[in-house]
Structures are given as structure tokens and as C-alpha cells.
Image (cartoon, rainbow, N blue to C red; front, side, top):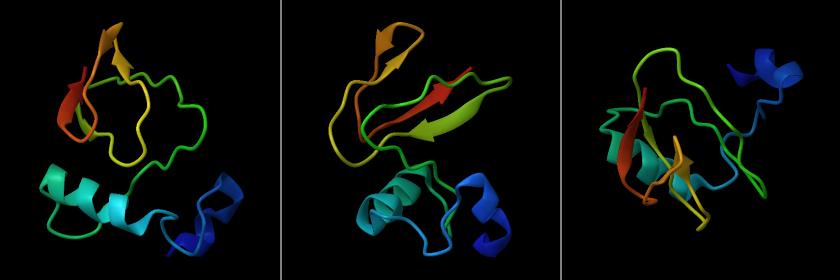
Length: 79
């Protein structure tokens, strides 16, 4: 349940952009709904401690991984 995570900024109502969340999960090959990080206005700087499969889906914005531009709506790996 998301209710236990509200103090950490996880809404109990589910994703704000349901369509993008569903399509992003489908691109990742998830058989069911999976956790997603929703970002608005300014994206975060993320660091992976091991290989992580990712997809950025939804509104257009610039995505860079280790200084290299990444195309939206396609999967990629953070390492």
C-alpha cells in the first residue's frame, strides 16, 4: 500500500500521468504495474550502484547519461 510511503512523497492516489506510467511499464516488459519515479519541471541527478534498466516516458525534455544524450521513450541502462 502507498499509504505507508506518504511521508516520503509517494502519493496514495497512484501516478499523475497514468498513460505514461502504463506505457513505460510496457516498454520495460513489466508484467504488472511496477514502481516509477515521476518527475516534473526539473529532472534529478541519479547515480546507480549497479546496472539498472530504465525508461523515460512522457513529456519531452533533455535526458543525459554520463554526458551522453539519451532518446526518450526507449529503454536504457544506468551503470
